[in-house]
Image (tube, rainbow, N blue to C red; front, side):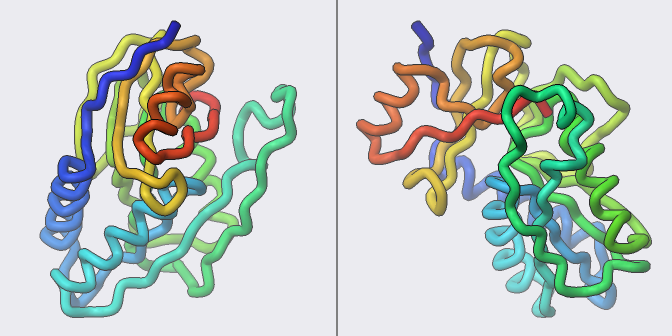
Length: 210
């Protein structure tokens, strides 16, 4: 039976995102504010929160988009289930701009690779940066985040479960035991679902390793 350990509660998540927003603001001049692009699904909600924080810090509009990478995954042809497709929203040109890609958990790096490929179908950014709420290690591709809310040392057989208020009914990050191919942002099994329901959350949906 799986067990879950809470590693980030709502206040921890708020502080982590606030720190990331300050770091983004410090590294990107006010005269050239970055644009934020969140990876579906939870990365898109986190990007929206970062946008609100950055607007306050920079006193300048910050463009926001979201990206569906379902058909850019390198395992799309071998997956038993068809990818869940969410519409990409990039209603502005990205050529020459600094684009900060936002995701919930960085694991293998394959989701970020797919996001980069998808972005270049929409234009040629001047710079690409990566912001993640949690970095759990175990990279399979040479990808490193520019901004990290929390480093979470994990074993491969563990899962990192991210829940956001907008989608799951609560904010938290937990670590649970599970099959290594389940990746992160998963429901952590029956116990995780029961625990989430008890806390007023809906279990996070399963995604493949990133």
